[in-house]
Structures are given as C-alpha cells and as structure tokens.
Length: 574
Image 1 (cartoon, helix red, strand yellow):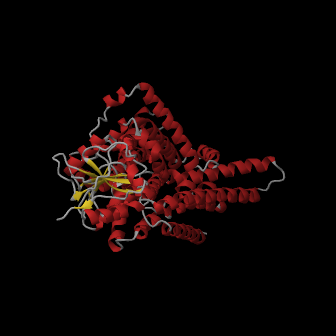
Image 2 (cartoon, helix red, strand yellow):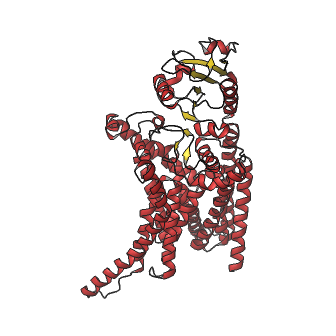
Image 3 (cartoon, helix red, strand yellow):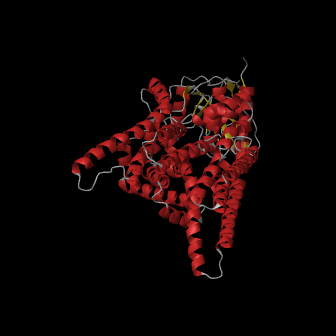
C-alpha cells in the first residue's frame, strides 16, 4: 500500500513537472514587471552585481543613484533561486524558470497527500492533485521566476508541519525538529514575500492550539494546586516549540536583516509600509511625494472608507474566482467546517482571513492589485483538499436521499467535472496571458538600438518598466514618476537621465506630452515609433547642456511625425 501510494505521488509530481516545463517553454521572456524584476535581479547577481539594482522602479526608498541597494521593497529569494541558472545559461529565460517549475510541482503532491488524509479516497486525492496542477488563474504563473511557486510551497509546508502536532505529544524530540523546520520554512516564505512575516505569529500559535486540543494539563478537577503546577509545566513546554519556530525563522531572515541594517539602518525596509498611505495605486511611482498618515487623512474619510469597501469586495471576488474557481467555494466551505478541529486547516483558515484583512484594509491598493492573489497561493493545497472533503460529504448526503445514485459513480462524474473545469479555465487563462507576455516590451530593443546609434551605450533612460528595459538591453533605467513634466525633469537632473520613453501605458499627468500637445523647453522630440504608439524625448539639463550627445532637427509636434515627417535627433560629432 505504501509503495503504491509512493508510486502515485511520483506520478503526480512527474505530471506536474512535465506540464510546468511545457508552459515554461511557451514563455520566452518576462512579460510583466514582477517577472522582469526577479529575472533581471538573477542576471545581475550572476554577473557579480550582488544585491544592487541597475534600475529604479520606484522612489519609496529615495534611492541615492543608479545602481543602488536592491530588494528594499520586494524580497530577494526568487532572484537568488534563479541566479545559478542565469549564470549557467545567461541568455535563457527558460532556464531561469526551471527552479520555479520544480518547486511548484511539489504543490500537487501536498494537495494529494492532504486530500488522501482527510477523505481516505484515492480518486478524491487525485482530483485535488490535478486541481493543483492546473489551478485556473494561477496556471500560467507557476513556472515564472516570481514569488508564486516558492511562497506557495514554503508557506503551505509550514502550515502543514505546524498542524502535524496533532499526530502526537508536542514534547517529543522528533516534533522539536519539525517546529524548527516549520520556522525555517516561514523564514523562506518571508525571504520570498514581505507579507510572509504574517505566517510567523500563526505558526507560533500552532503549539497553543494543539495544547488545548490534546489536553496537556492533567490534574484532577478538584486539585487546584495540581492544576497550577500542570499549567506551569504546559507553558514551559509550549515555550520550546515557539522558540524553535522563531529560531528557524531567524536562521533564514537574520542575515538579511543584518544586511538591511547595514544598508538603511532598519532590519526591514520602511518602503512597503509607506504604501499603506496610498490614495491611488499609481502613487506607488510618485517622486518626493508625501505618503504619510496626515496626507492620508487629508484625502477624506469618505474616500478612505470607499477604498476599503471596494478592496474588500474586489478581493472577495478574486478569492472566489482565482482561488476557488467559483465552483469550489461551497465545497471548500463545507470541508473547512468538517475539518475545523484539524490544526493545519484551522491555521490556513486563519491565514486566509488575515491576508484578506491586511490586503484589503491596510495595504489597500497593492492588495487588490495583486498582493492578495500572490499571498493566497500558500492556501491552495488546503483549499483543494477541503473541497474534496466537502464533495465527499455532499455526495454521501445525496446518495442517501436519491435511490438511483451510486456513490462511486457520482464521485467519478463530479470529480471529472471539477477537473474539466480547472483544465478548461487554465487553458483559457494561459491563452489570454501568454501571447501578451510573448509580445511584451518588443519596443525596448528597438529603442536601445537607436540609443546606441545616436548616443552610445551609457545613456540612461526613463521608462514605464525599468526592470524589463534593463533585462532586454542592460541599459540603466528609472521609472517615469507619476507626476508632471517638471517632476520628470527633476528626476532626470538628479539621476543623470538623458531620455524619457512614453508608451501607451504612461502616467496620466504626461498625456499632453505624449500626445504632442506641449513642447517643454528642455524636452526635444527624438524619435517616434508610430506602429508602437511610442515616443522618445531627449532631455536637456538645467544648465542648458544636452543630456546626451544629440543635436536635433526641429520637429516640435508629434503630429508632424505621424504625418510622414521621420526626422529624428542626429548624433553630434565627437
């Protein structure tokens, strides 16, 4: 039996890995900022750049220059995982995806094991495993050099190990190792995502939950002295697993906190905390703006309440569609009710409630824009297993009331239906996302070729997606600030930036500049790519000198270029 079960786990893992590799092969480059950030970080590390960043993608930490200390908003582990593969295969995005394909292939195995334990049925275990392989909206993300795979695996394993205390006395030696490993996993989750720290109090809570469940204190009901002594012994015993969890966490996160202390004077970056005070998501990219409690309150309580209610509603919809594939929600709810005494499932339920609240009521704008989606990945194996438990309950109830139903046949039909829904949704989402990722940022290499021809390799540029621009061109870049032309010029002056590239997705305050409706004195139209709706401006310094080595033919309006005038700035003689 054990051999058969092991063989099936190997098959589940092998099937998952095969599908992950196939999907990875269809994605030849990072298609959005997060993936580009970690891929660029891996390439930079592989080239000896360490934890610095040769681009600026936000100004929350007030970077002193380019390059500057990196990973002060997002955490470094995804880049660390991909860096060895970037060193071995410098130009291969496929290679950079391999550690993530491998890590995410373990999630279906965990879902299988959990479903097998709570239902005792092989078919339902297979169903949970297949749901984890496909997973609908998560499906195209599992192989990307991003936080999805490592955070989901480390977080879910930590929650599972913490609940394994239900299996025996919490005082046993082998369980002490388990608490230490759980702490290590929490540390790895935090090193992957900043909100991974939310797992620490939850995993530390597990020994207390198990203590209450396993009735550690053993005195008679009328022995007050014995009760007090037993309680003291229980509290002393509780301190050991909690200390082991914290120790394991510190082993992983301690060196990173020391690094942060050396770089910025605090163990954790304050940049993420500043996003609490956003009044618009685009202000994540503002420069020298006031993000503080005072500015937030000045926004108005009606706006604050409206934003929180909106985030609660959006995240609820995201949970329903992305995590539960809609049809799993009632089944998972019934399964969780049935499994409420299981510590792992109880912790996972608390975790979902916590991240839902944090990403709706505290980090409101980053939360509904993707923070909750990323963080919820750690609960997926438990959701799938709970849904299988709920399905088992529903079918047994239905079979008792419908004489024509047979449990085994109904189970097969409904399990196959759920898998079909997951496969269909996964293929649909992949078909929607992957073509866009494949075509993303094609303009970047064209812009870089133009810059090399007209200004050389050293010119810096302001763009909408600096990590992607650096990844494709190795040219230092900064994000276009969410501000007016004067803000752009201020950023350019500070960081020695010679050009600004305006693409269709550009800051709203620069719309008139993008449309050619204004021509500031210090900005000269350098080049237009009409087929991409992209405009490049050269920036003149405040002292009147050119930022680059350009002299430009006068082309004041973008409309002239769109009507056939293709004059561009020319390289000045050296």
